[in-house]
Image (cartoon, rainbow, N blue to C red):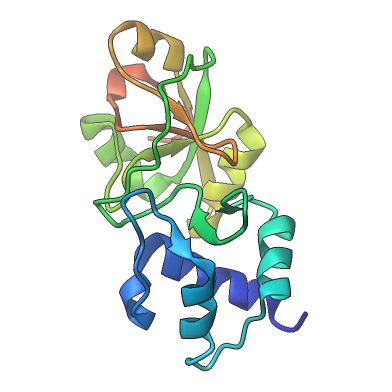
Length: 184
């Protein structure tokens, strides 16, 4: 398939952030009609067939997208900046530690204010340092923060696990974050 990465990024933009760019309607759980999505994407400079869409969903390394069981609907698994999207995730027992990738430029603010969801619906965390490293490296030299998720949960904070394995929470206070020593 031509331009798979480009089409996947465009799909991510539409399903996570700007469905209105093509007049796409998402329901409150983030689902869009596959038929409507394909019709409206194909009115733009992108062309996308159902088979290409299935390939993007199946091959996306971050498992960003899911089909409904009958493949008539599609949604992004997490990462929405659209406020009204509620993925219907259930509270889940968090592992002892989770990781978050960032860069040095944000550390002072994180030390003062903790990790905020910013324009997204949740703070994103991972069980693997390598994943956090990848996320942090998108903006420069990565810094990996260790979050004491189990302690947070004991103190009343909720955690959710998205369909693609990303851990989500509303906020991480600085008191639950272990900062690397060499990042002043």
